[in-house]
Image (tube, helix red, strand yellow):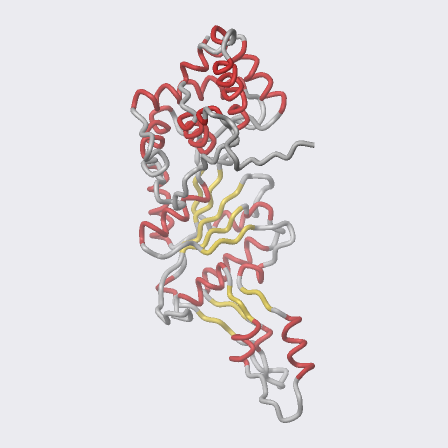
Length: 346
């Protein structure tokens, strides 16, 4: 059987070689993010009220990236990220406790060994994460010992068990949480070890939801809400032209961006399943530009299919790129059929 090496260029013409190492350049999340004016207003409301901002919208419209944009804009470091699971608990958002390592340490302890204090247990077996890390950072419990505000991104909050949303909002409002594992007092009435943050440096909390299930009304009451719609043609053009780093070695003109967006909208109308969003548009345009393709190549697809190996490769490349915009086999077939029969131009 032939061995395939996807990192070795086997074609003389790299322009249409799908195995060549032409990878998407690294761009910092949030660096080239441009929120709409309406979204900026929602962010300002959340900042003024010191309330979490709950974002909804179809996948790919930039919900999660907003947190990185805010953090970069204010110089607050990278956001603390928590990806919600169906079995997540409020404690998962605050800290991780290595119970096995603690158990082994206690079992190996000999008579006369130094007693593990709460401070040592914390240093050895507790790791603060996400919201817990942000609360601790607000009082300078970090390597720099500098109090600072953080951004916390809680992704897909709608996947969480019913009680979690309300539990974390209480923690945010009080800027306090308990770590029972640090209670080394023998007295049953001894208070549980508390971590207290600085309310003046309350974290900016961004929550995203794909609306897979309804969130509790008590939770919704305590959030600022914003729905990110799919941008219109003018907004999409502005977003594409703002991606200077992404297109740094193959700049987009206004005319090119407009032509790509018009074609993108035509393709989107054919798709019945998951509609392509802003993120897919950006990736597709970069991919097309990297292959040296334009919307005109798609409009003239059928008339150029005969008599040239190069044109055949080009057409195969065009069709393979539709997998960026379509996520179901029936939609991929429908789009490719429209391109192949030249009805995409109508």
